[in-house]
Length: 348
Image (tube, rainbow, N blue to C red; front, side, top):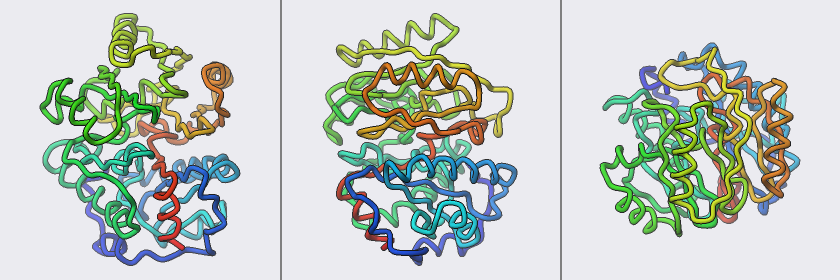
């Protein structure tokens, strides 16, 4: 999102000289999901007035993850000590990223990982935004390749936030994917099925026009072919959303949950608020890490989601960062199995 900020050259060079920060991280259980977060770079003007909020979110999030799944935070040398003081050196590595929204420029689908080309929308749009988006993604790609992770690569444009799946062959993507790649639904479905073992794809209209148009602000799979969606006051949009999901996903079970959406504070007017959107949840095999906004509706959302899934519902305070347009899922890169083990070994 900070494509207009010129960063010192050494940040680009650091990617080839990662340091293992702290003690051996082999203590981590490789059978668990690995969740990777990224701190903003020191001196990044775009996030300057949000640094403390992002830090607080990360600390709260890590504290909820560390006894349940594996977690790493990518930081630069200047923020390393602050993070280590709060969460411990075993969870922190020096691996500076050019942006914090790891979901969007990392690998999609933890079972059959694929790297789409990160779109310009996440970096302000236009040719300049696309150039910076490619730079952001290439920095992470260097780590992925050096760690010898297994994945497929495609020239198809898409952000990870616009690829919501249940790992059982069902996927939800907004129609921005069709426009970005200038293809029809039939063509898109065919191309996706070549990449990943996908059976069914639902193409939905975003609840925002322009901006990111990510599906993970609208819908989340909490079980096989089972989704939670936002409650929308606009009945026309809600009816169309249900229709599109049912058309694309046979026998889909839809749970509508409370949605106290709040756009009173927005960090960047190019991107919508995520405050009140419980659908931006991170789902692992055993858990749903659910955003919480320090409001009375939080408890209702937990109850509603728990009724829709057999997974443990884990609350994660997200009021720190939701005004920036994302939260729990947007901040998280998920890895599983051999790829998780390889990344841990890379930093070992």
